[in-house]
Image (cartoon, rainbow, N blue to C red; front, side, top):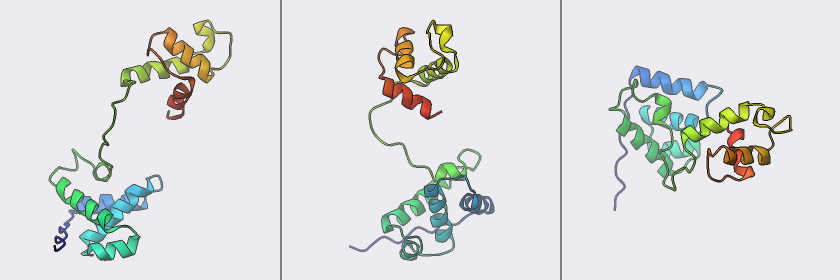
Length: 154
């Protein structure tokens, strides 16, 4: 069975400028920068096979980002930025057990002094914060390890 012909990528000036900025930015994830380079190469007329060789990616990767870019081009840049177009799609799985509201309450608790909660400590430990989260009924149960992980993401 023949391989389908690669979709042609045509970029507006704003799209090209946005992609080029992403590839030069210092604080952008390397996956995003690579995806931007793939789209730019596709717009410059390179075939998937040439993109695979140039960037050491698989043919599936080159095809995926070329096709995804073409599909998302109908959405204006005001509604979906260049960087957002290069993000991973949500993955399937169990929904989060801690809601955004609960996370906010937990973060607010972490900013409080432990003395305010009647604890005789100067800094929150993972166990103390987990106990306080349960005591305040923010969540029904949480392990000290999970509580600590929530603070590392801040």
